Length: 402
Ligand SMILES: [Mn+2]
Image (cartoon, rainbow, N blue to C red):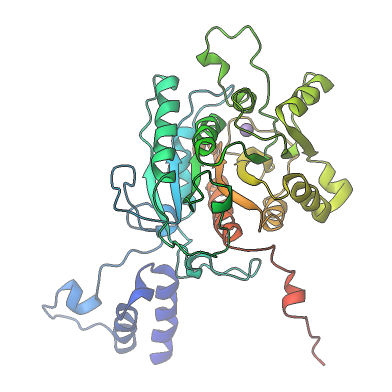
């Protein structure tokens, strides 16, 4: 009987988000060991303890983190904020990424602070002295893109100006040296939204850091010139042209890089244009030719010691593994390959990151949302690591049994 109780208690621990916080876990185990008392008038609290959320229940925040309406509540402090931007009215093909933030949060439900250590990173991002909270979504006008872009910039700047919670002087990932005011600013991990959301984000970051480099994971360049045939100034700004606009506005330094490109193009003129926007290209196939470590080396070499923003379009992953996106391209990287490259980027001077273009309506079994949520967990670990984690064999050599 006791054995059964321990086993079931262990299962409860895996399923319950709040159980690690106090005595309620032991309380639940005691009940399971002794068996429930039938026919008493005990209340729920007396009989079963607090109403803790399970991983598949309760309000929806990223990885069950503390949720706050940070845009209106200036008393909330954090070092890293998760922020949703439910915007999808500047896309060229399938809409639906306005549901991306909710989809990614749904995909994150089995993640929680009580079990956040990974073998691949060798750390738990929630025990590094860095406060991470979910700041909810920016309420965006779905009828006027100019208004929505302004709302995104104002929201981002509002959070970027907050004091960091940690306020240490020598923490991992400090980027205060790059800030114009030499203060440490919070980092924001944005859940898109279509890729256009990066333009107001870069506008906001520019006010704090000046021009920055961008590491851009994507099947597409997103640097296309809107040309002179756009019917209106607003129509120039799309999820395929926002980097071009950002370059026009002087928001990026000339040291950015794409990873995972495989879209169809007009011709080599697209690459010439892309270079004028400040990018170099690592294509999807380059990974097969040069390997993971050389991909990582080239990205790190390109970025160097500059402040850098990481933007990841979920369509960099093969649509077989991440089908829920607006402009899928066949033959992409695996989720595991993308995660390995991200691990290799730890220690660069990240000022923020996003994951965009998740459109849950096209998903199957939440596979895309789960991948996106897992990559956000990697972003957190990446921002808290001073250097890429060593291969596990280097950390703890394999010993053959005799
Ligand atoms: Mn994109």
